[in-house]
Length: 139
Image (cartoon, helix red, strand yellow):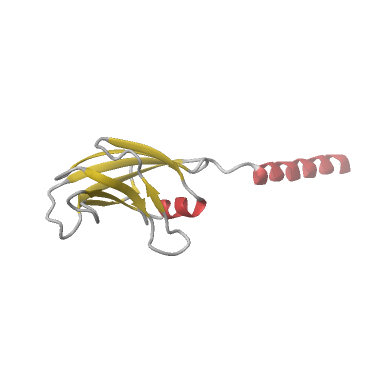
């Protein structure tokens, strides 16, 4: 009887250790942003962005399109202006339709998942931004 109790106890401890040491399940989270004119610009531009974030590899992948009054000069994602989750990711391909990837730091990933990011499209006519959109969880 003591041998059976020992084996059962050993099995329970081994199973608990296996569960505790198993890696967390990676997720691929979906995000979206509706790109609208920046307040005060008078722009009639619009656009959209769709993104995926792999929580294991920390890779953000995005694609989108827009219509604007002139040509785009830059585009970027922005996290909070300050604090541990502040972030900035410059988009390299900015002509519509656009796409790209970036590897995020853990704080940047946390800010993205928390809904703290925006995307901004800057143009020759509006160098501070013509289109802006809040990046939110979506499907």
